[in-house]
Every structure is written in C-alpha cells, then in structure tokens.
Image 1 (cartoon, rainbow, N blue to C red):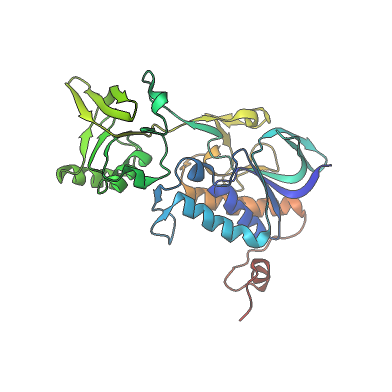
Image 2: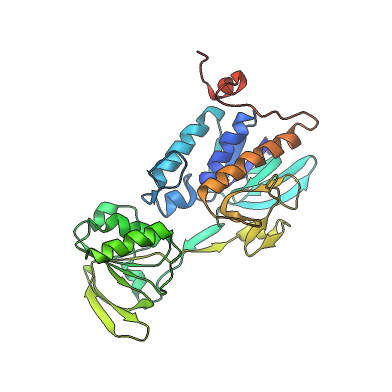
Length: 342
C-alpha cells in the first residue's frame, strides 16, 4: 500500500534536511528519501570533516556537525527517513504524484521536492595506472580522519574549495605539504587563495601551478613518492606519504532525467519565486537546480527551501491563505517547535 504524504523530499543533504524544517513550520510533515545509507549527502559521504565558514551566524562548522545540527533542528517535525533507496519512478496521479523507489516502496505525495545535490555522484579520480590499489591507504578522494595526516608528507591535487580548504587545514599538521594545480587560476574563494599564498611565503606549503602528477612510486606499505610535471618546465619528484585529490564530482542525474522535467546542463530549471520546476508541484532546491544567477552555496539552498515550502503549502491546502509568522513571537510556531511559552 502506498504511503500517503503531503510532501516527499528526494535527497537528505543540507538543503533537503532544511526543507523538512521549513515545511514543518508550516504544519507540513515530510518523508525523505536518499540513495545513501545515512543522511548528509556530500557533507557526510565525501567531506565529513571539511571546514565550512559561510553558514550565517556560525563562524565554523564541519560538514558532519552541520548535518547533525540540521537533523536536530528538524526533529520536532517527526520526519520519516527512507535511506538506501533511490527513486525509480515518478508520475502524476490524481491530486499529486505516484512515486516508487528501488526497493518498491510506493508513495502518493501531494508535492515533491528534489534536493539531490548533484544527483548520484562519484569523485573524479586520478588517471594513473594502478593508482586504485592505493585508494583508502595512501590515495584519498575524501577526508574522514584528518589525524591520519599529522606528521606526514602530503601532496594535494586540485584548485577548488575542497583542495584549498584541506591545504589550509593540514598545513600546520603535516611534516611537508605541496599543492598541485593544473592551472594558475583557482576556483576556490579568493580569501583561501590569499591564505595559501601566505603559507607559501612562510615556507609551509609548496605550490605547483600549471602542473599535474604524472608518476608515483609505491611499495607494499603504500605511497613513497610522486613526480610533478610543470607545463613548459622541469619535473620534480618528491617524497609523499599521502596523495589527496579533489577534482570535483562527476554528477549523474540517473532516473531524475526521465521524470519529464526541463533539464539544462544536468540541472533542473526552476523559477525564482517558488523554485518550482516545469511540472507544478515538483520543486527543486540546492545544487540540483538552475536559474539565472544561481550560486551553488549551502545558504542559497536554505533560502530556496523556505520559498518552496510556502508555495507547496498553497498546493497542499488550496484556497487557504499562507501567512508569514515569526518563530520568535508566534504561538503556533512555538507549539510546532515544542517551545514552551514564557
């Protein structure tokens, strides 16, 4: 028998978890589906210890801690999690949508929220023969235990936020640290680039720009050295205990691409009033959507979740005015949040 729900959220990353909260404030209970075994999306699966500095009023938080806090925030609204399941089928039916998962769980939802990040994702990997044998030992595409790198010789590949964030975080812990970037322009935040250059000037980091790792040497215990080739220059071989590569993710929309949604460059097109797709009642928030001026930031996903919740409430209870109420003063909000009136 199909589970009846007013809202079904696909994707349990930061945006999806905050969508639970925004719907809950409006009195809408949600079920949430994710293909991963636990909530958190990229924050849990790829970057649990990644430092995050741009959450409003939170100067610093790790990816794992952010997810923990978002789940705690959503707790008063009793969300139902369906983990380790992928949505296999979505079709319009009656006053909502029929949804079936890879485990043949069926739902009938009045509204659907796609918050699947970049979809089904895998980190882009190094293209070096046999390097896969060192994955999880000396070669890493995610950081789960930062303490593993203390006192070690580390080479980090990449020029985006993840590469520079970890270079900055590990610079004081590592015995030696080098960053190898295939360009001389960075995708990371300018402030991070400036900090990296300061560390280079202080002799704490070696930077190789317009460069790539072309060879490596390993034995039974793991990585021993890597060779870095600079475009138009010489090659440098350096000792290395660990090689961290952050080349981004290879996104795959999977079954979402077959839902009849308007897709542009592997992202769902939405409006900026409701963050609704071309199919009324299906919303897309977070990294999986696109619109003019889109910025793939966690805080942008939070904003999108708020507006999508109000639009969904109007669908769930048609003809009823949806009033904006403030959590600071509203007795209704306090009741939903389980806050005692003073």
